[in-house]
Amino acid sequence: MAPCETGPASPGAVVVRLENIGLSHDHGRSFILRHVDLEIRAGEFVALLGPSGVGKSTLLRVIMGLVPPSEGQVTLHARPAQAHRPAAMVFQDAKLMPWRSVRRNVELGLEGLGLNRAARHARAMAALELVGLADRAERWPRQLSGGQRQRVGVARALTVEPDLLLMDEPFGALDAITRAGLQRELLDIHARRQGTVLFVTHDLDEALLLADRIIILQGHPAGVKGDFMVGPRPHEGAAVQAMAARMKRLIAGEPDPGADAAYWQASEI
Ligand SMILES: Nc1ncnc2c1ncn2[C@@H]1O[C@H](COP(=O)(O)OP(=O)(O)OP(=O)(O)O)[C@@H](O)[C@H]1O
Image (cartoon, rainbow, N blue to C red):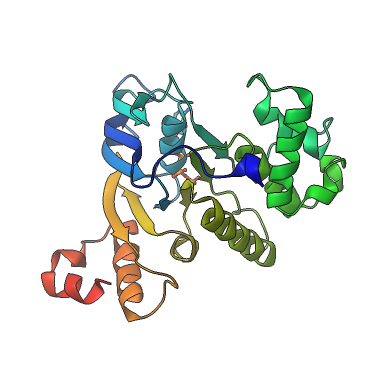
């Protein structure tokens, strides 16, 4: 599966750096995000968790370079986000083009990279194999299930060999069984590629299942209110439950019991 192997980031290198990010849609009268500082390192699987409408998708779009921040600086691999995008994004709904085959939808991400047709074909097929859909390559999107369409969206993002995979609630609209299957597949792909993933969700269980690190976004304007290293897998047991209880309180905007040193000790892995 050579075309989809690990990106060039060396382990531990900072892939995303956000410095004092602010985002306003009304020229600074009100802010959705304010004073957001964050570093994400190569190989991390980070979940961004927070209540509905807090600004998670907005932060992802700022990182992707789709929305310029009103304040602060975004750097990807120490380059301004707008200048260089070693990132790919998976949206809540795969947004496939109905008049293109599954493979040609996946190839979309490769257009403009100067690859010839054979190379585009090979890379798209490698990505489709990774998500278990190589045998559906010549079908039309309408011939796929909702879960399969989302997998095509994941393949389209993987095919550009991103250093950073940004995922905006990619499995939110799926039934529980399909969702569990795709979560397993994503963990498997991450274990093989060791790429960097930033995954937006409002589901604490999904964050605990997938991520090594969980960032809590909360407030108006929103900022980082918690940053948890979940520890070794599987993410279960009393210590993880205590950490999850603390996250729930932060998401609900309640006072942080982690400020109590004894509690924090008990919740450390
Ligand atoms: N273009 C825009 N103009 C004005 N306000 C916007 C715009 N886009 C988003 N917002 C507002 O910004 C806030 C954050 O939206 P965002 O979609 O980032 O939230 P979210 O945390 O991803 O929510 P959800 O979990 O429900 O998807 C919301 O209050 C939303 O109404």
